Image (cartoon, rainbow, N blue to C red; front, side, top):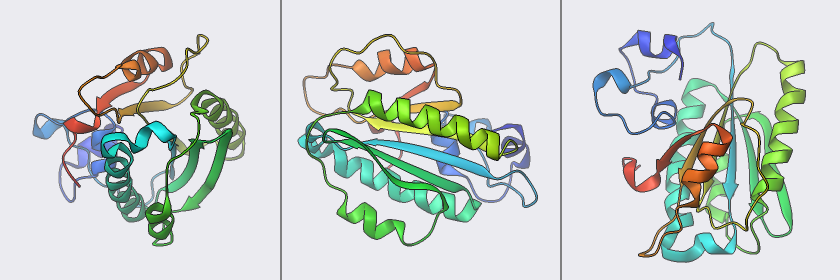
Length: 199
C-alpha cells in the first residue's frame, strides 16, 4: 500500500492492499501487514449493487472479495467507509468505523436492484473524503470501487483525490469493458475480479 508495507517483507500478506495494486506477479509485488504505531488507514469502498450486478453472479463474486477485505481491515486495524450505489441514490452503510464482525451479516444481506447511481456515489465519496481529511490530516486514505461498469454515459470527471482501484465485476460472454475507461478517467488502477485469487 505504501513503501513501509513493502519494506517489512515478512509476516502476513495484506491481500487487500496487494490486490489494489493489481495482480501480484512476484514476491516484490506483495504488501505486508503494518506495524503498530503507524498512521491509521481509511479504506473507502464504493459498491455498485445495481440490478445488472445480479447477472452471472457478479455481486456474489464481489461479496466474496469484500469478505476478505473486511478480514484484512480488521487485522490491520483500518477504518472502513462503505457506500453502496443502487436504486435512485447512493447510500452510506458505514462511515469510518473500525472493521468488526458486524460487517459480515450486513454483507450476507447485501442484494442488488435498481439503477446505478455510481457517479453520484463518487461525488458523495469525494466530498466526504475532503471533509474527513481536514479532521484527520494524518490518516492514509484509499478508495476501492467495485462495479460492472454498466453505466449510462457520464460527463468527464476529475481524478479521485486519493489512491484508487477499480475492480471490474463484469461477467458474461459480451462485455462492454467500460470499467477500463472509468479507471483511466479517475486516475485509478484497474483490475478485473477474474484476475484476483479466489478468497
